[in-house]
Image (cartoon, rainbow, N blue to C red; front, side):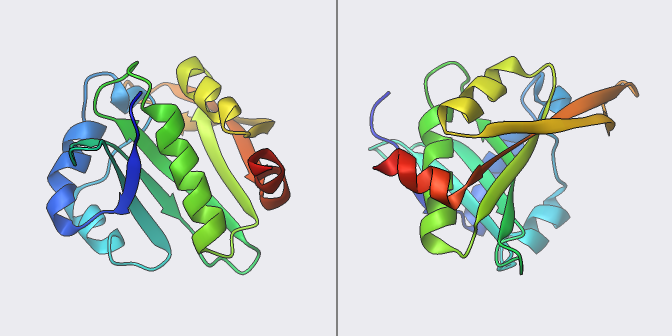
Length: 165
């Protein structure tokens, strides 16, 4: 994977974000927001919409962080999605978002939940230092109406700092 850079999303990026989160099969794992939800959250200082780009400025994926500035320093990776899976984009995209959270905000604990069956995402999270914390049983409702378990994972600021050397 060539170099990937992160930048804050603008309103002009919302179509890319919506198209990416609506890719076939993504509804089972990452969820999606309406246009109104994206437009409301994008300027909200408790959210960070981040776009991963290649050297030519082509958008490769996005990350949405939420609960930034939380009193206890708990922020959430709400959503991460790549435009073309299995091209090596997910790991550096998440790494950039983790760096952003710890370098640009008061985040102490960055957490996420992941559908138990989403093994590819879990591997990306582990490669970025996230540790399995537990299971939220039948916490998710899938598009077909069935329930799914979520794994809770997190990385703490000291763990992130130790990984950076």
